[in-house]
Length: 209
Image 1 (cartoon, rainbow, N blue to C red):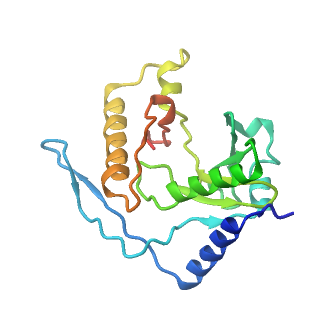
Image 2 (tube, one colour):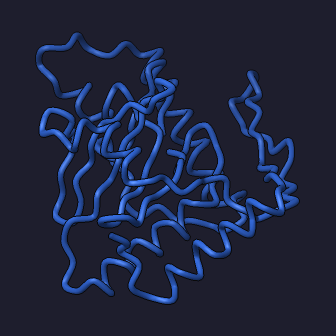
Image 3 (cartoon, helix red, strand yellow):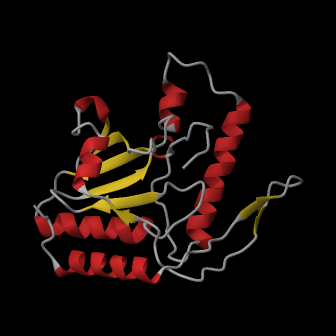
């Protein structure tokens, strides 16, 4: 059963299909680190196209990937969404964010469109990438999966050894790169107002996102 209720969602996916048919790719700013003073240089800020790279997932894809949204795959839960770990058929690990609560369906769709509009056009190794979304049987956002969890979970888990300073430095530099991209380089400037250790996720090689 389709969940689409508003013209905004219909228009969004109509434009997305048209974009895929026309083709094209984005070029985003690339950061280079100066080893002498740790400053950041913008190698290129040209963006020939504003077409986002995310795609539309079917409900069957994410249903199978998350093992039918099994409680064992639940990795996070907030007031308005649940996040499940999933594995696609090609072995790629994903995080599926399912919007769960809102005062009205219209409000839920507005929040959904706002989040896509905010993060759907970013492309940087230190910013969590939106892989796609699904609007069948609910509203879902699909992201890359950050296998090491948040910085907070690693810093405060008594069962883990203390994080070495080299890794901490790498996380700090990567976080600064990501913020600089969002604030200064991204075509649609994004100001992150809630930077904290629990909101910084880490990849398998401790790259912050």
